[in-house]
Image 1 (tube, rainbow, N blue to C red):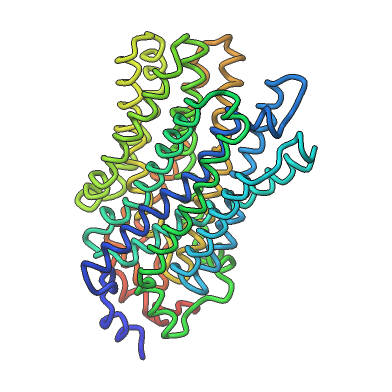
Image 2 (cartoon, helix red, strand yellow):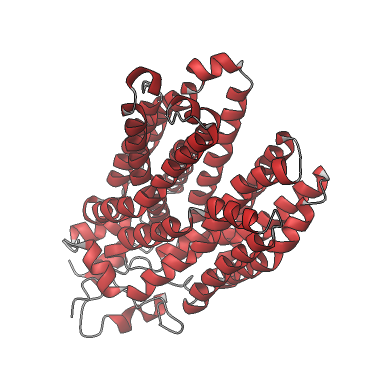
Length: 471
């Protein structure tokens, strides 16, 4: 069967066949990403609440917290490893099958944390085992978002790819809010109960979530794009090598594009809580209410911005979001410094609804369109997660800058603006991609004027079948 014929049999983005199948893919992606990122996020909350006392025991409790936060960062270090490893699997054995594996890796490692003995029971082996489980979380998280987004993008109708793919990002934000709410509930328990067994409940709950996620993911069809490649025996043996060889520009764009949103989301969700409680002397409920509020607003805006990107393009929204983020960085802290709860909440909602939300809503479709189908999962997951690893330590950097400036946040704002500039360069170096045919096994690199659209497909095939493109 020729590539041309097979593409006619399975129109781009419509291989799922029915609206019911597409709805199942969307549901599985939202629930799956929400549950996996719930697992990833609750570790950071537990570090602050209990791990410094139960696992990272030090004479100075603050030192125990710092060590615990360092292991939180281990998850970011291993996310690119997961992106490369599981991304390559996704390009070889299938998107859905790999997502099932990442669900098991993430869910089991998180559940096991809830069963671990503490430092008091087994000594130094306790933090070692905990860190090992955090490594596994990082490996799973490194491939989850890329796989879910790829599956959605390859199932979705071409003209609504941005809308449907944005649901993967919605799941991530739901996971963040869910994790925070669960630990808020645990925090209401008596201190003794929380320290002895209550902290384990959010982690043990992961075993239940695994079953839900697996049930949904096993019910969806494999990507029609991957099915076609498999039928034509057009699957790449070494996706990592091919991704780096054929899409170096897209790879660099993918790294830079994820710097800003990774940096600022942890400043908004983590550093701002510390800043408000210590520097502005606000009660914790003010800061936590602000985080939950902006999280809910961002969740609601994901499909809105995704649909807008289908109308006006990915690039305008990406450019607007990073420019707004950079310009609003210092005013954001001025509003926090007022100490007025309503103003604080407004600042957090403005920063995220106009700065963060457009960028992350566009992200699933944008990354899927950076790479050809044969190496899409690998290129997507690996490039994005390298960006996450580079920018994931932003709360620590922000805290250091705040201390250096004697509590004045201007250096933190400058740091945020700097990350916005990095991603701005990446987006300027990219091109509009909403017309990209994600069914093509190969397409042109993601550069200005690179000619990556659906109408360029026939030209790409001159001299070589576009499904093979090895010439």
